[in-house]
Every structure is written in structure tokens, then in C-alpha cells.
Length: 49
Image 1 (cartoon, rainbow, N blue to C red):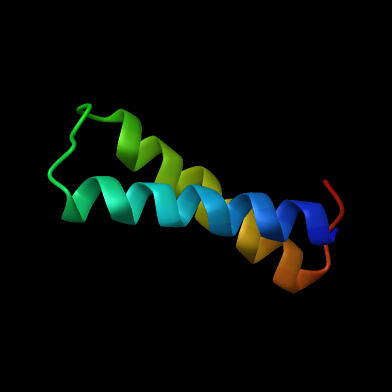
Image 2: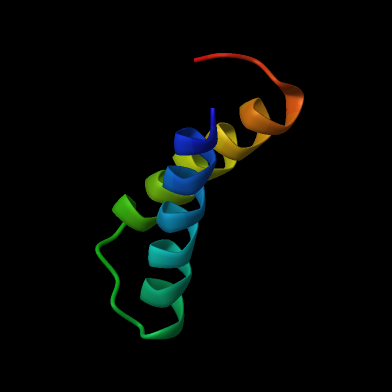
């Protein structure tokens, strides 16, 4: 489960860096954000993926 939390945090940081650095790839960065948030929420709820 810790792996999913780490992956979620990495994806979130990458999305944030892209947003701040104005490195935009259209919707790809927002997709990364959604994936990261889903993984973090599932991990916090204790639901195995």
C-alpha cells in the first residue's frame, strides 16, 4: 500500500511542478493529478488496489 502512496505523491509533485513551471501538455497534467489524488485517497481509506 505504501507504494501507491509514493506513486501518488510523485505524480502530484510532477503535476505541481508542471503547473508552476508553465510546462503544460494540455490535459495530461490534469490526468496525472486525478490519478495521484485517487491513489492517495484509496490509500488513506485503506482500500487495496
